[in-house]
Length: 272
Image (tube, rainbow, N blue to C red; front, top):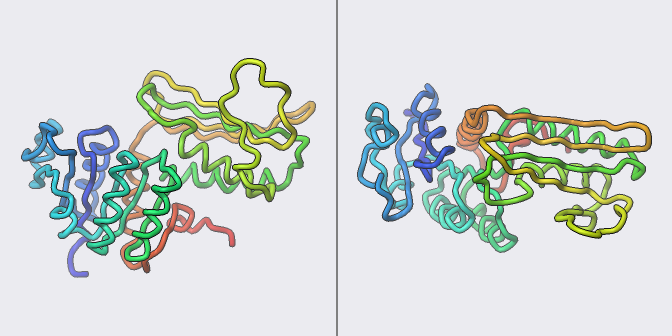
């Protein structure tokens, strides 16, 4: 490839969308070639830089995803499940890398994303940061080392506008803990406690979600035994860590075969 990879960003008026635009525009390794918003949004037709209150970037906000992706090598997508599924199909047509940070995807959504991955690389993760993906690996190893005498609780906190719970990252951590113990998360998941729930079942993996203020993202994995507790923790204070991770994924995917990948692949952290 003789020029830098062209990247399209979706949902550019949102907090992550703006952060992605800034990150890509400042990168010496990529070009911002597209900015997508939903139909009817008042940014449509404006330069994305000026719409964000800064200097013009030479990229006009559009609601025509197909046209934007036709000139791109990758699309970075932190939107909503229905939109992400549509972007997956369009990215597959364009043979563009699709980096998905969207959470709250249903089994049907994942089936459709899997179908799109037969034609282009898809990199999907509940969290794009290096620190969180290291925490995933640590969680798996600690869970493997401790037996069911230690209760596992995943505790997460996010801002008051987040619409899904538990967070995608919390579910990643729960899956890692379940893998460490050699069980299916669906069989041991304990969430939504309220009222007279009875005693905690041995071996369950619990989830607690906190929503408030402008919390970017905090995740704790608590291993609580008799007389001792172990806590693994990650705190994000700036969304830029997610944007940088997503751009790293988009660049990593440029020479990869069609298929589904995640940040453990991107960061070289996968252990077998």
